[in-house]
Image (cartoon, rainbow, N blue to C red; front, side, top):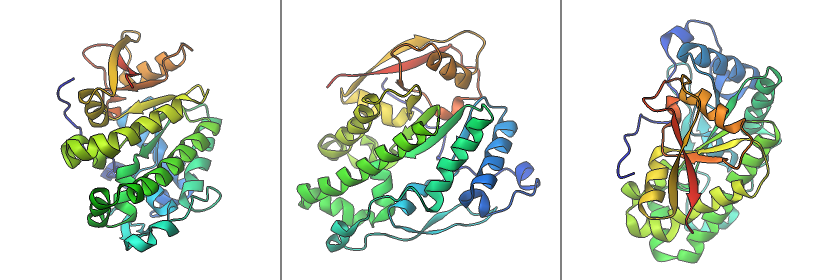
Length: 288
């Protein structure tokens, strides 16, 4: 796997056909019933097999204390104010409270969709993507180069929060964790920072997921997979699914076999509504 062509950002821009249905905004980004309705309409619009949540990249940063402008039907939620504004504030970064805020609503929305026997995927960002949304990236990259121990302390804290989020979602019955760390891939941060920090951080997420016995899958973003593969953190092993299935149907086909395949990657999760040229997914096998 030498190259991977990304199919675009993880934020979901709302098509006009869906906007005309009268789903309220910003409630569709913040309230479980509206989230469920928007997820269903996206599923229908894309003729997909999988129901996705959430629709932006700001749920985890907000849960860590960032202030969010929720936007509306035209503008997606975006960061308004960082949670950490100086190196001195890093130690004050709070743990996630899963009983309140939008992160609680997302978990409730998963449960609502599962009650209707839907196949649900939760989009989860990795540590570098989250950290550069809760603090000025310039401060973070300075920290990476000047104070490795301090940098590792915030990475470790965010890793823990991400794994807690994943575990909470799995407890609610989510089928797929769609994981990517677009701000932490080698092509963005360079080989040294990737090998010293980001690669190992993603490896920790993979191992943390793998240590649990939930039925669902962890699906790694293609760019995240590429960085791991090219730096010999992982192998990607082809695994067939039944012919005539979309990629999303194929993922569920693999999941329901009940074998040891629980971590997949090397393809884009945006292909779940597509019939691919080959009925093949890629199993992630750790090399270290």
